[in-house]
Amino acid sequence: MSKNIALITGVTGQDGSYLSEFLLAKGYEVHGVIRRSSVDYRERIAHLEGTPNFHLHYADMVDSMSLVKLVGSVQPTEIYNLAAQSHVQVSFDAPEYTANADAVGVLRVLEAVRTNHLEKTCRIYQASTSELYGKVEEVPQNEKTPFHPYSPYAVAKLYGFWIVKEYREAYDMFCCSGILFNHESERRGETFVTRKITLAAARIAQGKQDCLYLGNLDSKRDWGYAKDYVQCMWLMLQQEKAQDFVIATGVQHTVREFATLAFHHAGIELKWEGEGVNEKGIVTLGPAELIGKTVVAVSEDFYRPTDVVNLWGDPTKAKTELGWNPQTTTFEQLVELMVRHDMAKVASEDAAAKVRKMNLAEYLEKGIVK
Ligand code: NAP
Ligand code: GDD
Image (cartoon, rainbow, N blue to C red; front, side):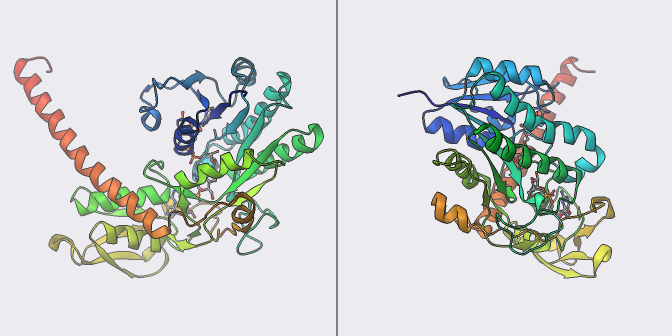
């Protein structure tokens, strides 16, 4: 039996870390792409480093030659192209880089496979996104819903989607896109709205932050659990035919609802007053010193030039053809597990800070640090 060899771009990200764990548990040899950074600590995959079947290599989505050489030396049977500048708001600030990494980067991966003559032996998964639906033309969205990208990020990802489809048809390659709706976890980047909220709720509950500033509270998302979603990426590559799939829970909530539930799990009940930029989340129940205080406020800094406000996925095709359960982890369970994680994280950060302070005091005393 031939060996399963996976190459994951974006291995240090939220999805890359869960996918690595998933594939290693299935007996894959896993190769991950990392890029040079001044900080060497790779938090999400630190626990995997040193595992016999887990290997890391330097390359970059904006460097064709590095990808060609890497694909040639690893000879993967599956590539999961997860690497991207993945923050929608940042794509307005760095649109050219976003296009280079998220659009042309996909082409570079496809060409790296062709250059190494692996078209017939290597299957490719492309991390596409519900952001393609953007200024939505239909609710809920399925595989047939027209695209209307509404940010530089989404426009770049649209190129990625179409070039994958083109290579599938032109060169008969097994390559497909997962149109994934928002998926979150304890490992979610801290500037995405869910994690920003769960960390702030934990800090406010523990007296370490006064107020959380958010942008559009009315924005609606279909939020799932990242750990459940990486299974679909793998399932898509195990099918007889390469096809694109919508991966979503089929349930939609607003940012306000996410925040209300997150604060609830942190022991704080909120009521909402005001509208638009004047809306506030005020504490009605919780620690005595917080009652009546505003702990959530709106800041225009987090408004986007164009915002996608109504994402809601229809996962029927994934359910019937992949046999996947979109409700493995519910919205309620997702919010609870993220808050529970961040309550512990914030508490332990404090303990670590105390130890650091003690060490510093000791060093000062000994004259090691001036
Ligand atoms: P993430 O946590 O932001 O991770 C992105 C990964 O891409 C990181 O490993 C990052 O490396 C890497 N990367 C960025 N630019 C690179 C470059 N030029 N060369 C090499 N690597 C680069 O994102 P995620 O949430 O795991 O999402 C994974 C993929 O799915 C992304 O393509 C994202 O756009 C897409 N997606 C995500 C969601 C979601 O809700 N999470 C939904 C739909 C689609 P560093 O660690 O060095 O920064
Ligand atoms: N980040 C952020 N910060 N978003 C906020 C805030 C805030 O303070 N306040 C409100 N929002 C709103 C945004 O305007 C957006 O409508 C929504 O919350 C979700 O924002 P993000 O969590 O940043 O995620 P996203 O939906 O823009 O993008 C994520 O999901 C896409 C799939 O739909 C990313 O993971 C993308 O990579 C992914 O493709």
